[in-house]
Amino acid sequence: MKTHLNTLFVTLEGAYLHKDGAAVEIRHEGKAKLRVPLHNLEGIVTLAWDATASAALMGACAEADVTLSFCTPQGRFLAGSRGFQSGNILLRRAQYRAADDDEHATRIARNCIAAKIVNSRGMIQRRLREAGEQLEGRAALENCQRQLVHRVQSLERATNLDELRGVEGEAASLWFSALPYLFTNPEIGHLLQGRNRRPPLDPVNALLSFLYSLLAHDCRCACETCGLDPQCGFLHRDRPGRPSLALDLMEEFRPVLADRMALSLFNRGQINLSDFDTQASGAVQLREDSRKKVLIAWQERKQDVVMHPFLNEKTSIGLLPHLQARLLARHLRGDLDAYPAYLWR
Image 1 (tube, rainbow, N blue to C red):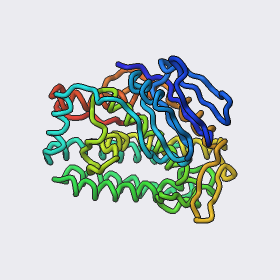
Image 2: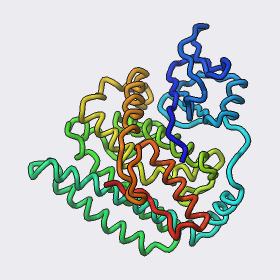
Image 3: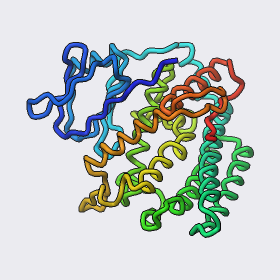
């Protein structure tokens, strides 16, 4: 198992990344700001409109198996740099056959969605236990968790991917209707009126979009690390430039990693409304210094240790996408009868 290494995040506008020996050096206005050996990195992510990288650095990253991703300041993935495609060709052929087999793809996608719904329901149950009878919106949360149980049952009856996508959409709508009541500050919860993006129109959606992009990057790296093609998914349809398998993989992690992180940051006061800017178009985005705070919290969170429910072993949260990608690979090779999606405990 490949150990989880650090990811270098570059948020400085106008930053220039270039190769300096066996390291990446970040320069700004002709001055060196940071130098990090490539062997210490698993990925590099730029979060600035005009950050650039040299061809020599791209080549060195490809040779060192370091993923180089270019994103907007809001965290939306734009492009990635990588070398020759690696991995076990037999595994990739098994992946392509499974994706072309509607029945097999439906079985994998069903497990991913079921885990997402169960993990969402678990967060609601936890809030109900901790908050007591005086919780605002308690009736709405109780109704939501009951409805989520029905959606899991609907998944069992679904026979194709389109039906699964319909159930997933209903469950997501239910989850975002309940999410405002999970904030301890009602002012923050009232700002959230469902999910919106491109652009996000409120601070909660702006933070969620940023966190989802970080999670998608980690899942994409996990797929590539174990030899899977991140472009070929089961639930998400093929589209040029879309890492469909990474998006499939991140579904089960959205509630417990990204959504939970957003709740924690707001509930603990680490992020507040002053950390966001509203553009003339109505788009809301994190300030540059605020993005750095989120990145630090995200990296620290990935160091926490949890018990993996299927492997029954302790692991860091940062390694979970890698473990799930390898379990998916084992299923595609025929070593596991089904894909064991991640269930949060």
